[in-house]
Structures are given as C-alpha cells and as structure tokens.
Image 1: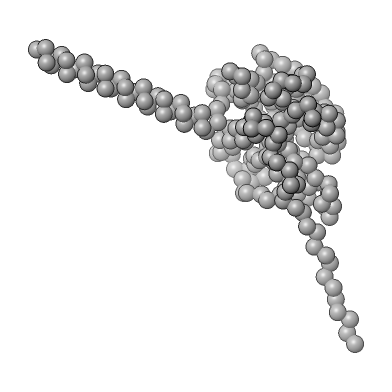
Image 2: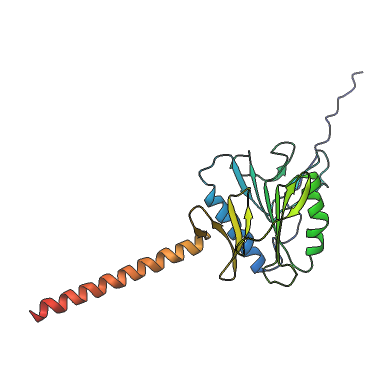
Length: 221
C-alpha cells in the first residue's frame, strides 16, 4: 500500500494586525503626507520603495515576528505594490523609518522598536515625531553608526537625513521635508493642488481686471 505524501503546511503571513492606521486624524495625516511627499520626490528613481503602515516580517516561517513602520523608505526594492514586506524576499534592511508617536506609544518607540530597528533590521535612520507635542522631546532622530544609534543633531531647526538627502522639520506647524539642494520645502499633493488652484484663480482675477481696465480705456476714448 502506497503511503500518501503530505505537503508541508503553508505559513500564513497576515496582511493586517486588526488595528487602526493611526490614533488620531492628525497622526494619520502626517503618515499619509510623508508617504506622498517621499513617493513624489523619488518617483524617477526606480529602485526606491516608499511605504507605510505595512506589516513587515523579519523571521521566515514565524508570522509572529513583525513590525509595522508608520513610514519607511528602502533602496534596492522596486516600486511594485507590496501586500506585506518579508525581509528574506525583499531587501533585509530599511534605510529610513518614521514613527508618529503619542504618550501611549513613545515608550515602545524609544524602547522595543528602537532596539529592533537598530539590532535586527539595521534601519539606517530612525525618527520619532509627536504631532501634538505632548512628549519631550517631540521630535528626535537616530542614525546607525557602527551598529548603534546615535542621536542626530539639529541644524537650523531641522534634522538632516543622509539617507533621504533631505531635512525633516516643522514648517508653519506641520512636519515637512526640506530640500537643501532646491532650497525649498516639499509639500504633499493636496497642498500643491490647492496652491496651483489659488495661483490659477489669482491669474484669472488679474485677467478679468485687465480686461475691465482695457474696456474702460476704450470707452473713454
């Protein structure tokens, strides 16, 4: 009698942890805006992947070993949409991580996550930001130096990121990214659209005024 061969059980890696994306709408907006800004900034670089709120698994065959960075950037990974991030299939280390913190998460952000990002995932730069300024410091960054995190010094009220080539800082009360090469702040798409619409409306108003002035001049002749 032939023995039936059994296939090895398939390891399931869930795509959701069942938790909300962020604690508050302000936390959510920081995450969404930062992902949007970074994706736009690196849109022409084919091997830079930007994501966030994605389950990242870092131990094969163990779906309990995961973390979900609020915002991350990694070089060496295509822009192809990912359902989950597996370090044994994608690049094993991340270049940049931003966690949007609160009083209820800061201990984990500065403890368990910081240790994981430094010692296991080897994240080159790790930033923690509290949009409500309820914790002190409300904004801090670390850079991996010889396997250990060193705090990043503030330069002109901003934290310079070597991995991004940009600087992180608050502008008009909002955490944005500053491009030192272009000497400009980078804004999310909705802000850019609003600004463009405002400029278009101003130009239209100016045109209407010029036409009215021309008509008055022609009438007075």
